[in-house]
Length: 300
Ligand code: ADP
Image (cartoon, rainbow, N blue to C red; front, side, top):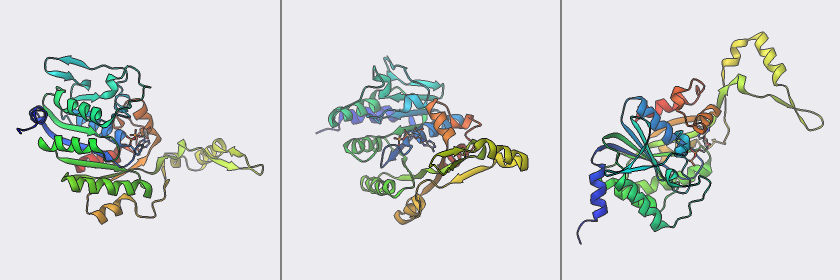
């Protein structure tokens, strides 16, 4: 039996891609797609040629996060053309192929694997410095095939995104052991939604009353602060949201001997930028999350 012809095509296609990074998470909703999107924006802002491939087939959120909702893929004689945010940031997602974004994608393994293979084989990325691959959450058959395909063409490694809670970290341990089993290097773990951080002026101050209601005291409290020490309004207030008494991702990384890349706070402004399909690095409002994300990118 000769080599798998699809694998040969994938290796040929990937020959023009210098670095390949797979973004993984144990669970859904921890910010994997947000991280993939912002990592791609950051690399593009550093003048690299970047491709972002969304193979989170059951929940493709990348088109929205890159401001590309409603766009369609075009085909040329070189293959499927990515949709471009800027000339050096191209995106491919199953989201571009669904006639209705509310439609659920209910596919079984072989069909999903077929599409992933096709994405790796048929997308005409051209020369890329980085290909960021946003994988589905968990570890499944799809993950094994993605890793096999990418390993055949040389993959740099995986970044694992988690939140600080134990329930998420337990799944990250599984993710780490998956990577070790399949021989995929772990570039590091990112702890996302690691405490709430935003300027004091954005908080609402609620005080419980005797009748059990919550009275909004924001106006008077803010007026008071403005009068006494206005500079306090620009102070970033930071609060732990999830229980991290277990040491969070940093401790888990030490125990499992994998690099810890850093923490990204829960930042409502980052959520807004993602919802509106924008880069947080070009957004002066994302003062809590953008520097944290940039430090992580610089470590890679
Ligand atoms: P996943 O890809 O892991 O399923 P998403 O990236 O889709 O998760 O994130 C889930 C939701 O949480 C999105 O609405 C996203 O904008 C928001 N989100 C992710 N990370 C943060 C953060 N650090 N601060 C605020 N909101 C975030």
